Length: 163
Image 1 (cartoon, rainbow, N blue to C red):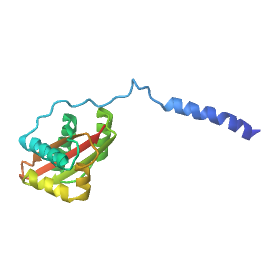
Image 2 (image 1 turned 90 degrees about the vertical axis):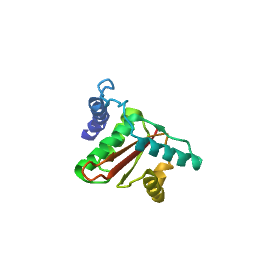
Image 3 (image 1 turned 30 degrees about the vertical axis):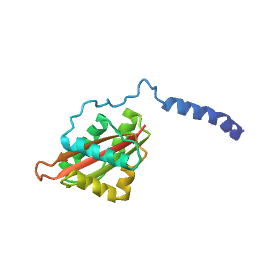
Image 4 (image 1 turned 180 degrees about the vertical axis):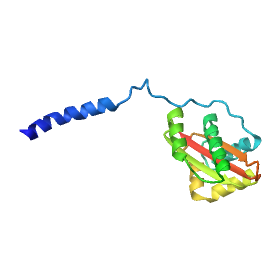
C-alpha cells in the first residue's frame, strides 16, 4: 500500500519541485553589454596581426567586440593589482560573455612582459594551446594590453568567442 502511494505521489512531487524552482525569464537579469571601449595602438595592431595570421592559414578573420575587450581589460587590471599572471576567474568571464553576447564557445590567451606584439604573437603561436585558440573555430574576439605603471611590464589578455 505504501509503495503504491509513493509511486503515485513521486511524479507529482517532481513536477512541483521543478515548477517551484524555475525562474520566470522576465525576472532573469543579464549583465549589460559594454559597447564603448577605447583601443590603444598596441591593441589594434595586435588584433590586426592575429587576423593576418588567421588569414595566412586559410581561416576567417575575427570580428572585434568591445564587450570582450572590456572583459579582457578587467582581467589585466586584476593581474596587475594582484601581481599574478594566469586565467583566474576565467569561468566568470566566459559565463558573462555567453550570457551577454550569446557565445557558445569562449577561450582565452594571456601573456606577460613581452615588449612587442611580434614577440607575444610568436610565443602564443609556439604554444600548442595558445595557437589552438588563435587558429580555433571562433567568430569574434577582444583584446587588452595594459602596462603596469609601477614595473613597466605589459599584460595581455585575448579572449575568443564563437556564436
